[in-house]
Length: 486
Image (cartoon, rainbow, N blue to C red; front, side, top):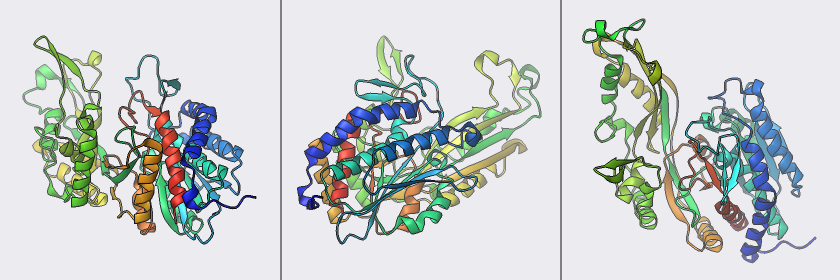
């Protein structure tokens, strides 16, 4: 057996060549098979266990991992009663004297279908086109387990020394990781002393460099319902006397949001933005410029004979970055009580219900925010209507710890080696509940939160795609950072 290579001898071009062949030769095909499995998260498929799609995705990933025959790897599908399963693997250290563990994280559950897919695409019908693999879940986050193992294999191929590595691939992330805490408790003795977390479930500002996620927003969600009548009545007979449930809904939401600007009004939903994050936003804005906001699919329309498009809340790149990462924002993501347009008669509807998604700044406690939200919306209802907010949970955001010198150097070295540009730092507007769990459990660990969700990749929406050329380079970069871990 060859002696381990010193860390300085890590061959970045060889690693990229190996992972590129793995991606092109097998991983893209396996991910296409994964996309075809409608493994919707338990929040969107109450009968997930009976349907068996999540189990099918886990079996597929487990079989592939074992087929790679990674030296020393052991794998287990862990199942707690009544919980979605997790995939757990362990690989012994090959670096002498190292005592810390690197934890690789991803998930296999998916968001629901959504509508608006391109006519030749669909959520469960994979299509590989121009380096993009289209379909639900490939980028968010089915690729993670495949990329993680390919990165380890790149290290093994050149006999590069590496720390002890464990993998944790869950199946409830799209439901707020509600099943994960019991697994963290059950597996804690096997996780070891985690010194590095590689979370492959985040985004990228562009496809031209490695991006490190520095913060994640939290979330409070639930259903707000306004009831006025027990049944619908003729609008000609009752309107003007019976108040509209929709108008009351607007009044109630006005307590929460300034509808002209989108600013959340209650101060407890805000936090002070750390100076370091503002400085990083300025640096990132200098890299991305107007692409911070131009990358979204704005609606075009004719205005006086010339084409124009809808505008963002701000066109200043710095403010745009901070608004989508460090400021609270309300979205209505679903509605009930409104018939389809073709079925809408002259009827005053008995109720209106909205699904609310409130994104919270990273430093705002979600449990407190959910309670404050419920009190704010339900108290003193207009016209004594029945106003109820059914909370569906919350997840506190996350702010990354300070970057250790070795970690910062490794990130920039990996980004330059594989992308030809330094690592970028960016906050993300989404939520990964695991990160707070791991930060609390392993406060000294460095957090490599990264991912393939770059411009137009559209996770959760129509035409989601995985940018395969970027995924290849990201995989090689992960291998290089693992090799640099002390």
